[in-house]
Length: 331
Image (cartoon, rainbow, N blue to C red; front, side, top):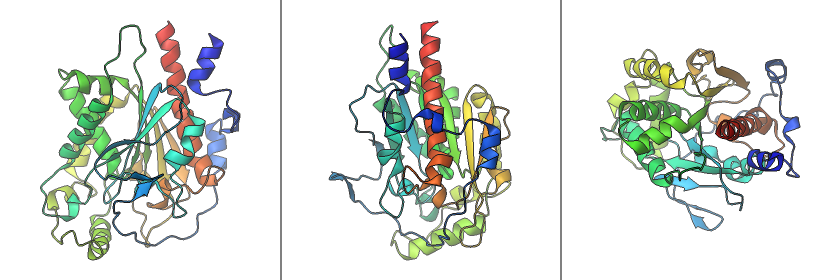
């Protein structure tokens, strides 16, 4: 039994042992890493490229962990506005930490990245957050197989950047409202933890979003119109964000919430400040990160302070959820 338990939570591997993880809130607050080099570069919109000779597609749910271990937990990354299923998580040196580093620390996790059209805020589209949330639910439902009798259900952890966190919260709200849909109910019941990276729960400066999008669009040829409805949903004081946050509270009470917030400015703006990044739940752990809104989700190496500040804590979250799932299933 101990061998099976250790195998499920990923112990016994030769790589970094979990004892190297930070162990307390005190060590977390004292171990804030040194500031990242300034990075005010505005990226161009991503194009279809390839990873390990596999063509990259923009829309859908794509698996990144390629090891042969049995998968006992789903880890789903959701990018933000003007993001991409791959580029959002990829450092300028080409490292994609969800694929290159995280699987070694949680080998029994099926790590996936969800891509959706995040340019809709700067287009003629009338798509809203609810549409993107439904896309996530449908793609993840299609990926998950019904649990056979006697088999432990596979828990879910979400990793969200920026608008991606709002999409995930709305998805779980919809899953609750439509609990007669057994696929949606499966996602709601088995979502055990969420890592929020620079998520504007209380909104952000709409002028910054508009300026950021305009600079990108000048290089992207995707149109110059603005989806005023979706863009205004991200503004500070937004009624939409307030409503989603209020509805999410009851869904989140039994989850493990890790909130990572940026402490560096991007283009002279702290895009999502601490006040907006925090939900304010008692089950929420706070992690300040010396990064800006763009670099908070891009990690250069498995030995970097960025990975120790973000990646290792997410690995610890996943292992904890997996261990709890195993113990609960045995009782």
